[in-house]
Length: 265
Image (cartoon, rainbow, N blue to C red; front, side, top):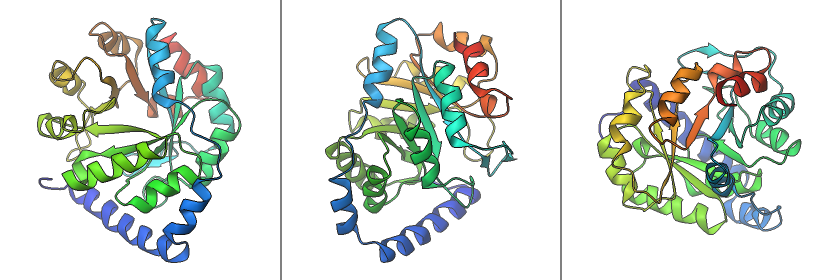
């Protein structure tokens, strides 16, 4: 997996401890039982594809209270109100941060956001264990994020196959050519290119541009991070990028949904 940035090492160490603690409190067998009785997933990828088929960008609007690099992003944080605002603003799907220690998120944030609208929801977290995949289904996630940079090829495939067997879509996230090559080994239907460098936390949209031609035609591509203006969005749309994940630019706005609409509609 290459050299892991210090902040990412801290996150992953804490995540491993969190998973260990949670799995002792609630065993995976119990989670499997709960997963069998929750409502089936909403079609996350299908919603994005439907937008693209209609000639519109597929927009994943993110609900995020804080981040390690930016600290507190939104003081008046209400997942239900944010979800409703995004739905009014034309979002195709939602992304909800559930990491507690570094992003001030919670599983309940995802449940709350999904409960007040019909949009499919991505669980945005650092998923490193099958326990978390079952957990994601139980809390209502329609899609999970798998970050290539933090997983071995074996773990990536195992977690991907498990999520798909549970009916969830999977957004596989890459940052460079090497990670893209590893991701494409799974022939993913949904791929995210994150423009944020994990070492410096700087964003550069040329990351998506550089990798764009290497993404197979049948894969739905989502560009992530760094968008704050309509011109930046149009820059990507002009290059045929069908999907966008937008977070901070909207979360800092008084009306996130209206801010989203101004960027895309």
